[in-house]
Amino acid sequence: MMNEKELKAANLLIDLALEEDVATGDITTDNLIPAETRKNAYMVAKADGVIAGLEVAEIVFRKLDQTLIWDTKVKDGDKVKSGDIIVRFEASYRALLTGERTALNFFQRMSGIASMSAIYADAVKDYKTVILDTRKTLPGFRMLDKYSVKTGGATNHRIGLFDMVMIKDNHIEVAGGITAAVDQIKAKIPADIKIEVETTTIAQVKEALGAGADIIMLDNMDNATMTQAVEIINGKAKVEASGNMTLERLKEVAATGVDYISIGALTHSVQAMDISQRLEA
Image (tube, rainbow, N blue to C red; front, side, top):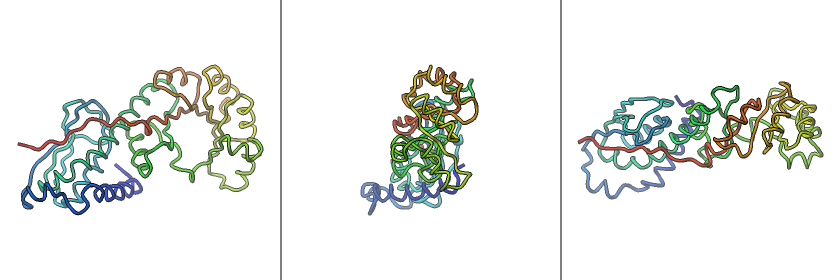
């Protein structure tokens, strides 16, 4: 189930999407289909994957027809096979045709993210390592993208710039070093906010550890260097591996002992899941 913030984001985006697509009306459907006609429809998976976004698809149709009858056969987070019926529903024939593309645009994207997240999470299931998402989301869609990630079994990193400190190379340069950057930040933020520091060398790892970083990011390091860094940190901070994290490389990286692997591709390179809407005969 989506939380309050996710549902709020979904409603805003759906309103924008319907205004973009429908605007003053569906001139084809409205001039061919009598207003009082009702119809049954269903959505079917045309590929294997993990479902995410059922509530969003429902909201689309309910905004067009409040009398919508929505009968889900699976729930978000469920794995489906090609050919599986996902949901059956009844509504105004006009609503079914007018809302179809908008509903599927949301639903296919969200299920695509969930499906990819499940693949990455499954790849490290035998390790302690957790797969994280990033801020590389479609602008405006962050709450839905991140909902889809966790629905697929991966984990949300920070939501935005406001809920966690991430000290990167440009910050370090301006502050005059990692220690100076961490000290300045600690003096200005609440103690319960986590501080993460991006590092690219063992020397920076040691400095970040000494400065008291909560999470140390190992950015674009080879596996041998990451193994050395994990040994140096020795549980005194959490360790995140980032950069060039392909599916083929995941197990090797997880074997170094890192706590997290962040994957931008979960949301920035989405392949929509193939889902079709069909009308009952």
